[in-house]
Length: 387
Image: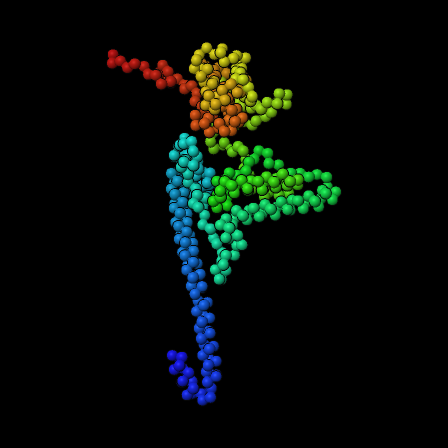
């Protein structure tokens, strides 16, 4: 083919063989250049095509899940006689707990109804340039978000150190406050993975905590308090949605004995109890000036000891209680038992869930039922006789 083109050019352009050769060489070089450029573009196109396909599938799936969630929310609002437009997520959680009561110990096994963006795994949106190269410099570390967080911690550490050197070493200020992290703890590895959207090992999680601990230990770390508190959570969560009755009391420290203690007011029928639970005790009971052995009925003793047995702190706390009202054989111990359970849950947060499952943290709202007219009692009926 090349020879034929050369002879044709030689016939058309006598004496222009050099020009023809230059034209052919330019044509061949252009063809070879296009071939070389097209091959990687095709390969990159396949990779991007696969990624775009997965991205579209995830987008359509999330759209279907959101539509199903909205439909379920409207049905739930109709069942609970509520307005679907003003129904919040808290209302949905309360409705699910009411319709599907569960006492499963593991909270993850209980039925929930939340938006799909909070439950389903997130799809990582990657960015590439025109030639298919990732724009993120940490793309090939396999954990770009995690290592980006470590880099941010390093930058924050350098910022805190520079701030300390500029203001305190130079003598411009005399106060260097560290961030106050009392009453909080670091997020667990599972929560960090959910926050970052990446799976990390226990070793990497330990490195992350070491970096955070060093940042917190620096003087003037309060400058980055907002950044640090994003990865911490309170030690005790709110029990508003878990308990019926008095909430978990606050723990106080006695200035004289330096013992932790709690005080709570409980009620059972007509009996009102003021219960104080003290840590580091020997199992001492003081109910209206009487000890445990002075309760003659065995069932009353069992009621008073039930929270300690369930929590596994028998003989480790002291109880001081005063009661008012007309309490019977079980009403008085039950009122005191509720206060003991709340105090133990406050002193030992890890025992809160077993106590809740046992029903010891729930108030008993029942009262004596009134007698009915023409009846010997609240429910009893006269014996029917034909004559």
